[in-house]
Length: 232
Image 1 (cartoon, one colour):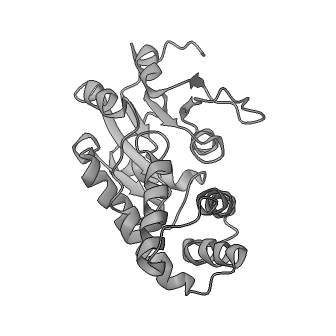
Image 2 (spheres, one colour):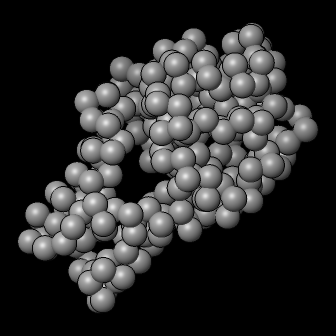
């Protein structure tokens, strides 16, 4: 962990994989949508195949090579091609997103950290996602009260790691001193690279102990509870 003497006053959190359990929400939404459309439980191999397809498409989205509208459809058209399923990917996507919006699952310890930081730090959230889905999940997780602003890529037309989405969060919160801000997230390619691009200190949540490679976070912690040591 990198040592610094800067006193942070504002924390900007990623949501999925940092505060919210996206994997759990994703699995529940896929199973729920499949059951609605096909009337049966999905095969065991459906989820891992979908996750591989979806993850690759989100990487493309971060690079700006596809739009969110293309992503929403392509992930299911590719999935259905893999399993030789004959159904409308656009219609399935709408059902999936409705199910996904129900998934307000919190990662272990996340609520306690937000509660502990409330009143001591100003807090905001920046997330690559679909507006109505993310707002629904935030409400179900009962964490909206912690954030002065929640910036969602689909709402503003800019996605992490583009520094523009961080600039919007800073503008919404009337923040000017970047040295007093810390960005916390689990994705090197969106949260950490985005923070670096924006000139803001970063804290990478790395539960699997991966090597960061060329993208160098300011701090690395194994879980969100480690944030308290940085802030103390």
